[in-house]
Amino acid sequence: MEFNFTEEQNLLINTTKAFVKAELLQHEELLEKTNNLPKELYDEIKKKSIEAGLYACNMPVEHGGGGLNAFDLTLVEKHLGFASLALAEIAWRPQNILMACEGELIDEYLKPAITGERKDCIAMTEPEAGSDLRGMKTNAKKDGDDWVINGTKHFISNAHISDFVVLFASTGTDEQGRNLLSCFLVDLHQKGVEVAKGYDCVSHRGYVNNVINFNDCRIPGKNILGEKDKGFELMNVWLEATRLTVAATSVSRAERAFDIALDWSANRKQFGKVIGKFQGVSFKLADMATNIKAANLMLLESAWKIDEKTLSSQDAAMTKLFCTEMLGKVSDEAIQICGGMGLMSDIPLERIWRDARIERIWEGTSEIQRHIISRSLLRPLGA
Image 1 (cartoon, rainbow, N blue to C red):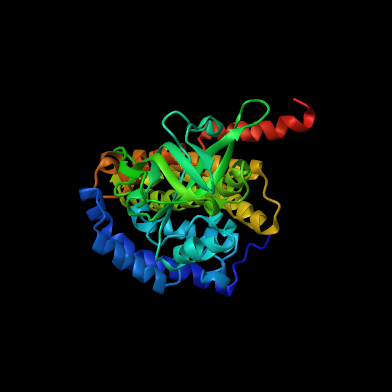
Image 2: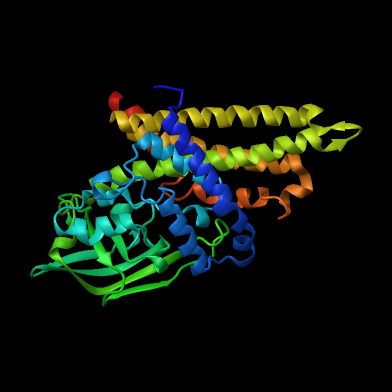
């Protein structure tokens, strides 16, 4: 693994940083006060992200995408993560699971998602099936040449501004009675689909979650992504990549919180000296910096392993677990260092602290990550 970034990678980092500074950070206050992202602002930022080459930078070049490998994509996602999520996500990277599209699905879904003509979202979680994905009740049944879908999904990010959903549904059971899952592409405007308001969330203002109801929704047989009953395998490939996205943005936000706390420690005076001189503060800074460095190294190693095709589920779980829990600790300590001002909206610490809470839940809770890690340690020993 090479620790020195290439000229191209440095250009990528600088381009992303410049985009965040020029196009995103100025709108954070509006987002916090209104919990709303105006459509005209969304469209303006989307247009500029396409011009900057950040939109769909994860997609194949042959279909119009940026063609970044996993390592370079992680650099982009990390530095986009410096800004509020609702703003950073406008520079959209379509679900990488769409690369499984074949035949007509390429022109109908993959290419329009890359150009920005159509927006995708993904639906797995249900009111009674969160981490227990095999327990999902949404089902798809074959009827002639079509599939008929029934069920409810919730916590679906930005479905209200999406054109189609990558949907996971049960298509049968195995010999042990467990659900077999398949993946489908479903247009959200068609009959039998309702996109409803979701829940008000403490984290990530302006970033909307929705409920999607399917009531005898009929889709063409060709709209299955991958093989029937093989959706679980397809899902695991997608989840490992998204866990690194969460880890990358967590590291960036931790660095932002640390920089605020460091600057405060070097300038805030109490008892005749800057507070950074007090061991109670300086030791916090040392621990925060050490944890951020460890998270960065773990993140970059995992991204590198994706390109080397050596990333294991244990690697992805460890990275997601460590980086998200590190963000929670760093943001909390940063507030402690800044005292009362840390909880005021004048500086972004209280937002980073609020936003940090969800990172240990979505894309697999910390408990699920620990389960994956411990299972991978014990299985080779027959336990």
